[in-house]
Structure formats: structure tokens, C-alpha cells
Amino acid sequence: MKRMKNKSLISISDYSKDDILRILELAAGFEANPNQPLMRDKVVASLFFEPSTRTRLSFETAMNRLGARVIGFSDASSSSTTKGESLKDTIKMVSNYADLIVMRHPLEGSARYASEQSRVPVINAGDGANQHPTQTLLDLYSIQKTQGTLENLSIVMVGDLKYGRTVHSLLMALSHFNPTFFFVAPKEMSMPREYKRFLQEKGIPFYEQFEMGNIDKADILYMTRVQK
Image (tube, rainbow, N blue to C red; front, top):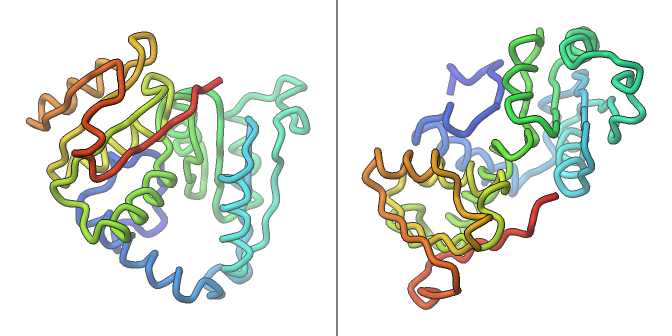
């Protein structure tokens, strides 16, 4: 975990199986004792360029429980981007104020770009249809807690698999644990080719279908809504 210190969290693919398991182990400790002043005297910038309820409030609650102070905005219209300020300039400016940046942005790749411009670590709270690594870590924690393991599970993913960033991150994370996937979606919302190619290269079995089926064989049923 030492190599993860002061490191941005941009994509779940940046983390090894051992990294993920260690994070889940730490999460269990925080669930048992959530109020730990580990970030006392730290400032966290919460930059949400698109609407969010659960993700934003989850982060802000966590930061408050850890003793940090939170600054930022929940609506891009209240930021200087409405005056033409670039993402680069926003990140460079905010990274002078804060010890950590949590950012959600509608453009794919924006979180990686922000981390390259920032003086402080950046946590990706969702970048377009690309990645949502912190949601994935929560999903993995929930799966491990309910199933007792992450290994050798059958996962049925249903809904908007094309634009749903949570399924993309979860698929990549579970690839460490010998899963079998079933993708259920209309053709226009099917899993993107690059993620299916990723599974093929790793020898991970997956099946595509347009109607619900194999539910009785599933360990996990992962439902997603249509993204806007």
C-alpha cells in the first residue's frame, strides 16, 4: 500500500488484485469505526461538473467523518467554467487550495487529464461513460460481504451497458477474480467492443443476450438505469 500513498485514483485498472483486496480490508475497518480524524487540518475540493446526489454526499460525508474540511461546488454553472475558464486552469488553481480533489466530469478522460495538471491527488468520481472506480470499490465490498468471496462468481449485468460507467469499472475489477459474465441489454446499449475484447484477451467467459435469462445461475444481478 505504500506505493498508493499520494496517488490519484483514476481507473480501477491502475490497481492490482492485491491493492483491491487491501483497500477492501481497510474499508471493513472504517465501516466498524467510521469516525477517525485521519484528515484533520486537510482541505478536500469537491468539484462536481455534473449532477450527483449519492456520490457527492458519500464523499462529503466521508471527508467530514475523517475530519477534513470540504470546499467546492455541486453545479458547474456556479464555477468559472461558465466564463470560459478551462478545466486545466480550474484544476491548477484549485490544487493550490486543497490537499485532495474529488471530481466528476461529463467528458471521458477528464479525470486522467486533471490528475496530470494537479499538484495534489485526484479521485475520479465519474468521467463520462468511462470509469467510476470508487463506486466499483463499494460494489466489490458489498459483493464480498454478501457472497463471502469475490472468486468464481457468475455476474449478470443488465441495462445500459454502453454508457454505464459503473459496469465498465466493475468488469475490469472483477477480471482479477475468475468471473463469468452475462450481459443483458438491447443492441443499442450493449457492452462496448473494447471491454469485450479486454475479457477475450484475459480468457474470461461472457455471454450476450437481449432478454433476461440465466438469472437462476447468477450469484450477482447488477442492474443499471439508462444514462442521460
